[in-house]
Image (cartoon, each protein chain N blue to C red):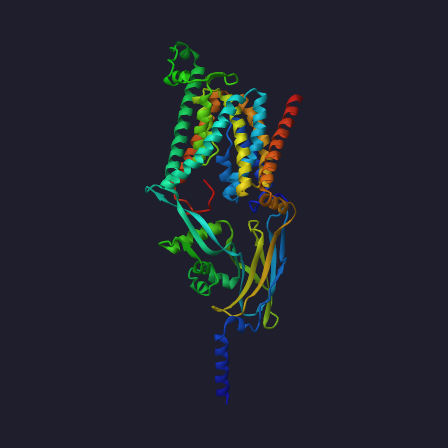
Length: 263
Length: 310
């Protein structure tokens, strides 16, 4: 009798495990963003977004902010004549996210930053996922080398980043535990809509269907006025920029002359 | 609080840093009559401004700095408007021509290599020549006995050729009498070079005025600024109109500093002798030359970069 129960349970479990992630989400991870929209005004210098919610008590978490995927064409440097480093052509990276910020809880962060991060890569969570999904044109001899340089450039700009100990948990209440994290939105993030995902990991498997929220960045006030002017009335904008610059030069001259006269 | 958002560059900057940067580059403008793009553009890129926006906003800023500098030098009687206009007309012709030349060069392939190497060699050559020449002339003035005993210089072939050109005109401010054609042709040549090299041309124009037009150094600085003013007005409007790359907030923060820097620079320039100015400018040219050589020889940290830089 008890053997039958065990076998039934085993099959039930096997079925559950083999189901696609979304259907397995018996305990959904919740995700709240505060704020969900960011206004870029004249003195904006990036901002913090608080992320909070609940996750299964025995799970590790990854919070991921991604920008829209696009194609980027970059100049490639190479050696000319064996000695001189110069631009030797262009290379296009297709289907790469404009931004890729990763924040993990401590346990997951240790896996991600460890020397042997294959486990992390095999789950398709880290930067490796970008490499798998992008196309490089013209097709390079060694995609690995080109991708490494691409990562260097993006990390240098702080647009691709991994913070390994950024998600904090508080004590579990039952099957769930609350978590918090802070996303430092860099000022370089262009206006647009970004996606924030939270993914729970147990052992080396993604166990829960991820939750997503959108984060919206909009220019308001003076920046919005200047941007629309620069793109919609560009000739007028150029002339205005020149006229104001000339008057600033004239004004400074006058101030210095009056100062000189007082001597 | 101390940051301002740049809507076109899409990044924010520290107000004081940019103000200081403007001041420093404006100072160089006022002293030497150069635009200072060679310094400003790479620094702005370092502060996270896209290369195209950095270059275009810098030209907007130079409009303010060179207005301020031109006025300051004009008050000292150091701007030769007649010469400036002729060089300017040549410069516009040359710039238009240069854009076509670079298309042909690019089509031939390997153009970037030729251009960069030529530019570095030219900076090295011009810088060294100016440095040595000014140093010798400084020594002469310090030891007047030597120059008194030296035989009067034989007129050079270059000077004799110049006298044969038609339309000889007097340029009162510069104190020279040369053919109208000379500034026109030289202006065109500098314009072509500037367009091909992708630089403002101040570095090339100043030595050309000193050695080929034989203008006194102080008048060269003022006249060069006058010329740069018009070039940058043109570049700013064109860049705004066709590429939308001028960030007015960035330009405004820069020019608050640079217009003041240009005034102070002019005062400093007045205190220095022509030869001292030449030596300082030559050193600056040589430093830029060495920096460019280092960039060419050392392995870059990142082998990829965004388009739009030099």
